[in-house]
Length: 151
Length: 218
Image (cartoon, rainbow over the protein chains, first blue to last red):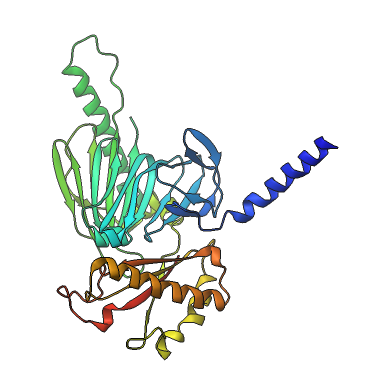
């Protein structure tokens, strides 16, 4: 009896979690809007499959497999998308215009990435950086594409 | 007809320079070094904005040099620890062939609405009130939408009090959106106070166009 109750409680949790995924989550930096093929989120060294609608946080890594693609929109309206076999980490996301603070650092580990600037680039023109293993791209706006071949 | 050979030339050049740089690097070191490895490579291109054609600006830097991109499809490559290569434009066909998979996955651009209040009042103007149904309609265009309501003020009063004033007005507009049918969990109210002026002014300047509430649907 106890076991079956636990099982039911577990099943309820599984059902409920996807429903609250679209709720505004405190501290989130943005949201995954488009997922196609194999895509993963790496958070605190734990790799989980990405789902459209999922919230993203500072320090999260996005990883795509062969044929995988993903598109995200950050809270300042910045948009980023990754092609197949790609990996990028949201190293820094600070969006606090009222305190005159803003910063966005995206580490492109490998693969294909497209970036369209949002409000941080407008309010703090020197605060957006796309970093690759061998270059730093300072972005004043607005649309950039990068291809990174890792060592 | 010409686009594929050009693309191949571009990629072969990248690979060859990568390999050569690796060989040179190994040669200049002691003989005990292992076989040359492929070095990291970065190709960066600046594109015109897909919606309005605006071309921005970007700086590509490494410890040994810097390149500035400021025209449509301007690109540069960095191989290993080298400086950015000469800036050269990619063709539209190259951009599509190389970056089409990422570009086609870009989420839809956020849409902005600007609302104004009647003078010294907590009531929206008639024109602004009429925008509310448009906001609700726009939300339907976005998968897993987020709506951010941002309060802005002019520079009259202290920065801190203006953050409070902006938040109060954003909260009023958020309430209107919820009453009109939006789900509360997707609507956030925030304030930029006097830090994000539509019309630049000195401090302590009354400017009705700066007293506004912006709604971003994304």
